[in-house]
Image 1 (spheres, rainbow, N blue to C red):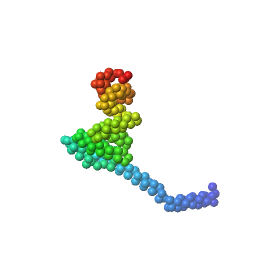
Image 2: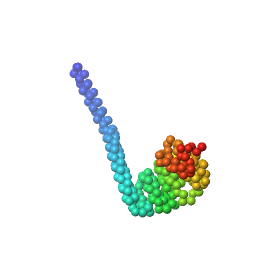
Image 3: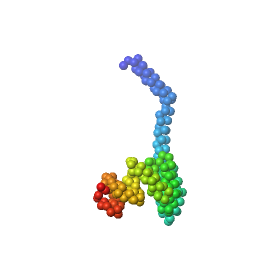
Image 4: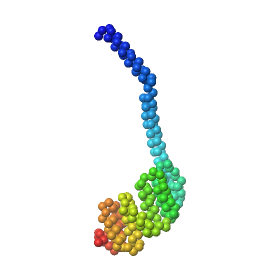
Length: 220
């Protein structure tokens, strides 16, 4: 390489360096900002995870403490004092409070607690469906058999995880109203359902025996 070519190459290299430094001075803050945002986002995410974990532990401890109280009403009142910003935790608290209120024969208050689950924003559908089903089990809240039957039938005809339990409740209503053959046919369907739990199958079988039927029969 001639001295002229070498000189030109050196000048070109210096020009490239000058341009690079100029670009870094002009736009160098962008990669720095990206790094800061990534680090800040990671730190915030870890902070939220840690905060949520602590809050969940505190809620769990408060629930355990409430459930150790002596009477149903004391437990219900203690659960009512527990606060949480998490919709799922609020739903669980309402369900627990409703159970304690129902045990204390405070059925109207239990129904209100269950209604509170459905009123929660962003609550998972499993919680709202469970609360709705439990409300239908509270016979003392003034719902007629016809209304309970209609609502239970809607659950039984849906894809709800409580559809088979709703079928059981419908059978009990049918027995109470003297429609024994309809109840026996319904119980037979429960026994034959492939997705029925063993506990529910046993209850259906025992009911058929009480009604004077062989639980292995299909009701034909």
